Image (cartoon, rainbow, N blue to C red):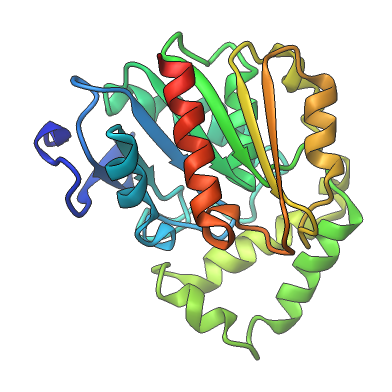
Length: 270
């Protein structure tokens, strides 16, 4: 990877991360890991590098930290995922893929910022033996720790509307193969075997501070998700409940979310 230290608050420097014979699309904003800590963005179930829009640049500029983004296998311009996804797909992302990304980008001190599936992956990483001493905190936006009806209902409705609504064309701007990206996500969440998926047992093992952010009327997850995390947590935990009925605080309530994440990152990295 090219040294990102020279890219300070400019448009992203794009590069590939090689994992075995496969590649992940990645981008870096701001200073490199040799000079300052890093915020690592973990995207949602239909996210990618480009789906973050200009938010990584905003985070880098306002925080004066580096920001790393990457598209998981099957998303953006990364290599395809193996479909159908297994019930354990987020465990594999947290325990195999994310550690390889951290190693290959030479991260030192860093904060994970995960949205939806990305938040769940952050929990699975931070609550496992794979977490390195460089991890200083995790900020979770609309994370999931168990499956609930409100989530599967919304995911089913998205599937019904995929071909007949603007959703498909919007997603096609961010994914090389929009059909595989969408149905790979949709079908595993609606698989009957996925209904018992639960990662609450990882939360008490997390030893770094957590910031939990969610909109009050999120159609993809009730506040019970972050309440369960807060209840199980043995780490310092802060809550930010936002008004609204969206699933993406970083986009829907960007100013408040950005400020909260930057303040949290600076606090745990101090």
